[in-house]
Length: 152
Image (cartoon, rainbow, N blue to C red; front, side, top):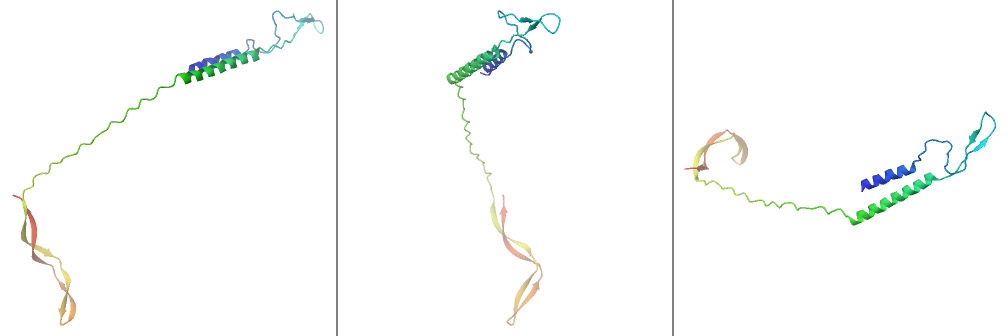
């Protein structure tokens, strides 16, 4: 379609340009010959006779007609040759497989054992004959029962 419009535009421009460059007298074929006038200088001189031919308007009219025909032809072509619909392929469906992690077989068991545990020093409230007093108790080891994992 763009090629057709380009060709039509070039034709329009070619028809709108005159074949004769620049101003000056126009010599017509088959028309009356220029009149010869004597006066002012030596020898006869030609007086231009102006004919008002509208070649430029005719060329513009023809060019406009060609351009209009090209536009109509392009519209008809676009209407009768629609662009093909794009092919849409659906996205592939990915199904995530579940991940199975085999847990290692754990053998062993918990046992209750007595251990020596360090206890930090602290203040302790003590009762002396109905009067509470705060007394510092220094850090020490105590024996406590704890759960310990035993593997075979």
